[in-house]
Image (cartoon, rainbow, N blue to C red; front, side, top):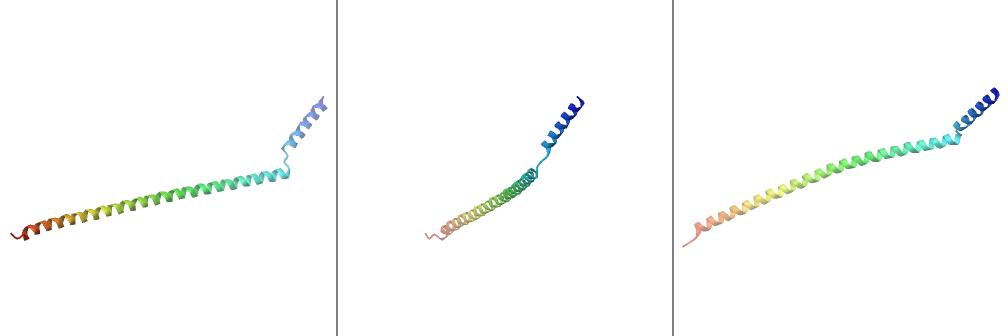
Amino acid sequence: MKITTSLAIAVGLISLAACNKQTPQENAAENVEASAENAASAIESSTNNAAAQIEANAENASSQVKAAGENAASTVRSEGKEKAEAVRNSAETNTTENKTTKKY
């Protein structure tokens, strides 16, 4: 019985040892897979960083365009008000001159 038990334990250990051993090809395959996973992770990280930078630049450009538009609109409004005021002043001056230069 002792020999049978010992033999059974030995067969079990040999079976387990055979299951855990990897061939050189399996080791190489796992290394290739791990290397590809690392490369893929690096690409994802790089593209995510680039996308974030593009978004930040776009937001800055958008703000600059908006500010430029607001400045241009303000300038046009101011110039329009100045021209309108000049027209009003010109009309008042002409009306005053017409009243004083009328001959009866």
